[in-house]
Image 1 (cartoon, one colour):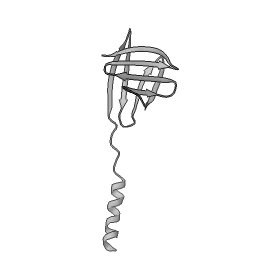
Image 2: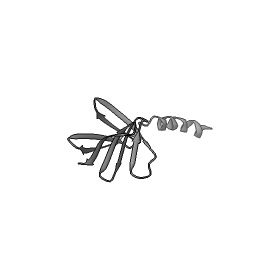
Image 3: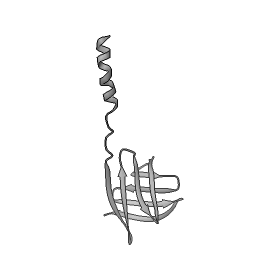
Image 4: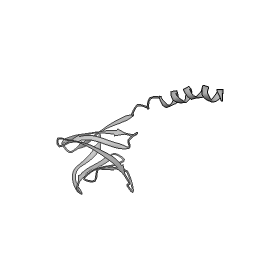
Length: 98
């Protein structure tokens, strides 16, 4: 019983450990005359980027190939060094990794 009481404070300390910092990756895509700056958040499995005055946060969705992120309206898809930005199925940007 004394051993269990001695371990209780240690269990409390283990619960107080701080979460690991989020690791971001950044990529830039050349989309015609526009530059699209993408932030990848591996911990949340999402991408973030500003476009047309709106800051988009898209979660990863299933894709047959490449990586695809969507919020149901806006979709960012990339494979190799190519990327597409679409809204409601209409292609807004066709891009190449810079």
